[in-house]
Amino acid sequence: ALLNACRRCYASLFTDRAISYRQTEHFDHLKVALSIGVQRMVRSDAAGSGVMFTLDTESGFNKVVLINAAWGLGENIVQGTVNPDEYQVFKPLLTNPDLVPIIEKKRGEKAMKMIYGNEHMPTRN
Image (cartoon, rainbow, N blue to C red; front, side):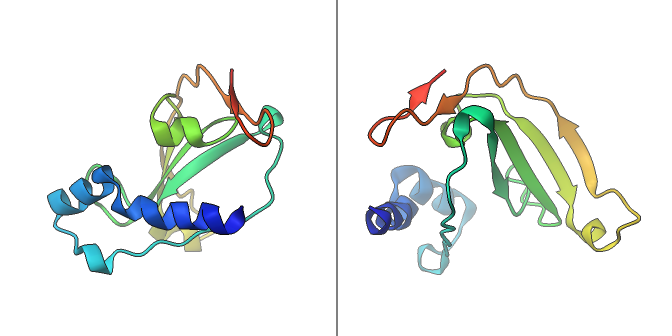
C-alpha cells in the first residue's frame, strides 16, 4: 500500500494541471523534483493539518513560506473545497529568535473537515 501511494505521488507530477502549471511558468518538466514524507497519521477528528509551500504561490517570491491549515485531513485544502487559515512566514527572520517571522495571518472559514472513516473511504463532515 505504501509503495503504491508513493507511485501515485510521483505520478501527480504528470497530471494535466501540473503540466499546464509548468508550461505557464516555464519550468523544465525534467528538472522538477518531488519529495515524499511518510509519517504516522494522527486522529483527524481531533486534529488539524496543513499544506506548506516554500514560496508565495501567487507572486513566486521565494523569501516566504506559505502555510494553509484546516481541521481534519489536508485533502480539503489540496482540493480547494475549504477556505483554510493562511500564514506567511518570512524565511530570513527564522534564524533570529528575537524577531517574529509571521508576517501575515488570515483566518479561513473552515466550514467542513474530512475525517478518516475506515481504511477504504474517508468521511466528510
